[in-house]
Length: 180
Image 1 (cartoon, rainbow, N blue to C red):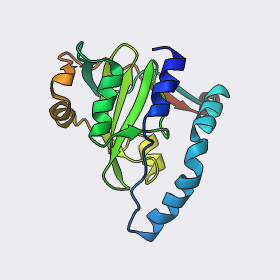
Image 2 (cartoon, rainbow, N blue to C red; image 1 turned 180 degrees about the vertical axis):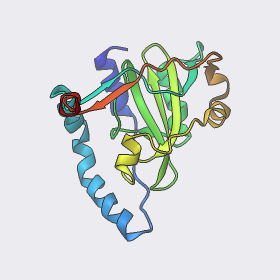
Image 3 (spheres, rainbow, N blue to C red; image 1 turned 180 degrees about the horizontal axis):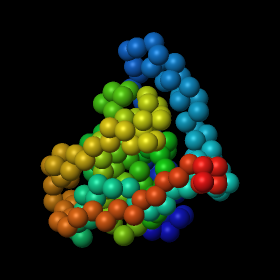
Image 4 (cartoon, one colour; image 1 turned 90 degrees about the vertical axis):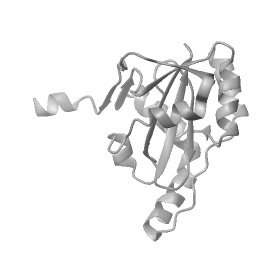
């Protein structure tokens, strides 16, 4: 999918909204992210361009591929019908077309990524809004393959062999020089 097509698809998708939390501390985080979120793509792209953060490859938890009878747009539309929305507070993996999430509360989310080659990956994790560092360092990230496959049914061809994730994430690559 060409970059222009990708942008057009994302513009049609509803943006994910946070669930208003009960606790006072989480409400403070909620308001921070409420105002920061529109700027996140620019900040994310800037820190990557400045090599402050390196993000390469695709994260683990391969689910399978979009079934051949569906277009990526139809697959995404199905996820939207089931409560998923565009997740702009997310890293972009190599070849990613769209990142979608389903939030049931302020703390946890189901996160699905769809790629140009029709690959689909998904996991369950802390939201970046509630626990940004835990989210960033993958604390509590879970494989919920069976739940995703039950939702997707014949819309995805399950991947049967091991997940060949090539994901690499690095913060301040200069750290190697500092500790060596």
